[in-house]
Image (tube, rainbow, N blue to C red; front, side, top):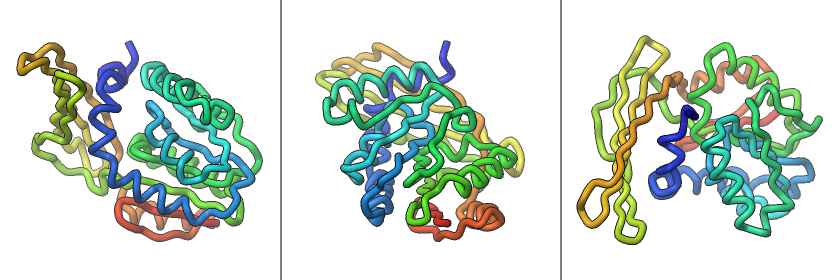
Length: 235
């Protein structure tokens, strides 16, 4: 079974609302790019929520949506195929970022809810890759989700109503050490008040702060700034 099978079944209903504020920040950051002539890379595109944000913010851009997980990728393909305007603009690559055939020049990199899956070693590879491919006028937009490794008490992160079915998600985190957390998300679907489905997902994530990103990226010739929930990097 896919590592994200449980999440994929609930993801759009839960993340669509819970992530809306960050999506707006991403769209604003991308809005400063003028005439993106090269593709935009969506790192860990998931079910395509971030892909849709990119497409709306940069109407003229083509997008490489990179998603290694098959369950999430099924939702991504469904989203792209169901919207004819996206079919000719979005290419879905079923692999990890470092295995993807990237073009020489990339207008922007977007990491929405995915930077936490890069270890410190892989982050160094990420900064090097961005520095190699990023257009002089482009940017890398990175969401900061877990700036420090600390326990997080369980709480409801989102609910959503679809017909007579209510979807809800509760999340908590346990710090493993100074750099890693184990997140647990419990999903429940209820029909007219009666539970009809429940799933649980656990993820090992790496804590990384905006200051850490800026310090690490600077060693690869990337400058940037923290703004809201994001770090935006430039060459």
